[in-house]
Each structure stands twice: as structure tokens, then as C-alpha cells.
Amino acid sequence: MRILVVGNEGQLARSLKALSPPPGVEIAAVGRPALDLLDPSTIKIAFDAAQPDLVVNAAAYTAVDKAESEPDAAFAVNGAGAEALAQQCAMRSLPFIHVSTDYVFDGSKSSPYRETDPVSPLGAYGRSKLEGERRVAAACPQHIILRTAWVFSPYGQNFVKTMLRLAASRPEIAVVDDQIGNPTYAPHLAAAILEVAQGIARRDSVSWGLYHAVGSGEVTWCGLAREVFALSERLGGPKADVRAITTAEYPTPARRPANSRLDCTRLRDAFGVELPAWREGVEDCVRELLTVRQPEPLNRSGP
Image (cartoon, rainbow, N blue to C red; front, side, top):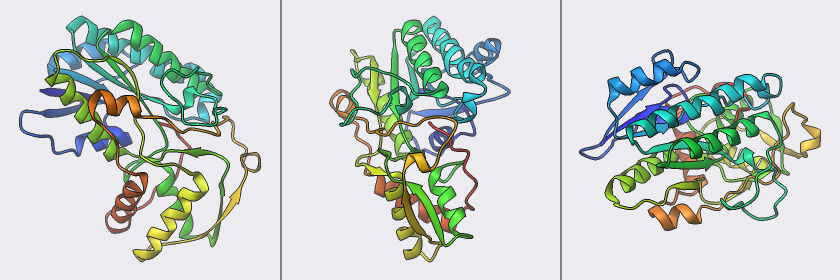
């Protein structure tokens, strides 16, 4: 099975490229300029060259706050771009795995969100990703849409890397403590996507549609920051005191869901896939960052 990953430099794309697939499975990634979601002609050319058996869309516009001032750019990539990929997959009868986000919900529910819960995005980014979900579902019958949340990794820009960077110069960091979610380690998500892809290849009948895929367990941003520093201190890295604050004390252009928790029961039941605990991902990530990489700044982006 040849899997084509759309995207090249993002956290998930890089995690997919870093996988060691089993015999008989090949993963190839392509991103801009060879495949540009804003230029449908490049999609056909890239598909012709790769000749994939399955396609994973790991490319997206993820600048959550910036999307408030340039919604057209977000919709062009996350809506029309995703649809163009889905259409190309449909033309070739290819299964299509598309990655979406918790930002399609408004966060008002008191328990984890299920796939059947009503959607109500709070901002342009969430609306653009919801538009992408709807266009993908309409364009390609053989689709799996995976909503994920709070993605972090040793790659790119994310919360864990930013905390370590800030701790090198600040004794105290204020972090929001009234937003709760499921931190998701991109390498764990990549492994789960590979499992789903293999499950599709093995089955005569697949339950196509919408699924949730996040790290096991839940925590607030403040709790996540404290876990990062506890691990960092144990490994001889930077640490800082964490002061809990409210969302109102840290205003941003885009509103964020207070509850980002996603229920992943459907994914487990359909494919036997369950992501590891978020703490395992944080430990792996912090260990690699302290021994291999340097933290990079955060762009307050979403998956």
C-alpha cells in the first residue's frame, strides 16, 4: 500500500514521514510548491506522479488568530483545498483520510464531544475546518474525517516547545486554567492514522465517516504547562512557576472552546485504535527537545 501524505513541514506531516511503516507499506509526502491546495492543477500532477492507494491530508491553514483577519485565506485552504483533494480521490476511487479539529465545537458542553454532537464554531478557523469537513464528505464517498486537538510534537510551533522556550528567560509564566482538552502527540496521531489506513486496506467493508482521535486523558493548559516543567526539571531542563489565569485575563483575537474534550469511542470500536495517554507524549516530546532540538516560538495555532 502506497500512502500519499499531503503536507510536508507541519507537525503531523513530519510525524507521518518519520514513521517506520511495516513491510508492504510506503509513505510518501508532498507539499508546496509541488502540491499546492490553492492550485488544483498541482493536485492532479502530484497524484499522477505518486500513484497512491490512499491519501492523507495533513495540510491546513492553522493560524487560529490570524484567520480572524484573513478568513478568505483560511477557507481557501481548509475548505476549497480540502474539497479539491477529495474530488481527486473520488475520481480515482481512493480512500481519503482528512484531519479536522475540535474548533468546530463551541465548548459549551460539560462532557466530551461525540461525533453526533451539534457543531458551532466560535471563529473563522473553526468555520473553515467545518466547511472542509462538509465538502470532503460530499465530494468523496470513501472518506474518514479525524478530528483531533491540542497537537504538540518536537516539530514546528506548539505549546510544549513554547513553554520550554519561555522558561529559559522567565521565572513565572501565566497560563490559562479554564480551558480543558486532550493534548495529542503528533507522532501518536500519525501512528493511529497508519493503523486506520491499514484497517481500510484489510476490510471488505469500512464504516466511512467522522471520527475523533486525541490523546487519552484530559488536562487544562495550566496543568499541561506544569507537567512539561516537572518533566523538564527531572531531565535537567528549564522550568518556571506556573500561575493559573482565566481566559478573560488572556484575550486573543479568536475565541477558543472552554471544553475541547473529544470522545474517541467510535474510533476504538470501528478500527481498534486508541491513542496513548497524553502524558506519555509529553515525556517523549520533552525528552527529545532537551536532547536533540531547540524550542521554537508559538504561533498560537490549532490542528
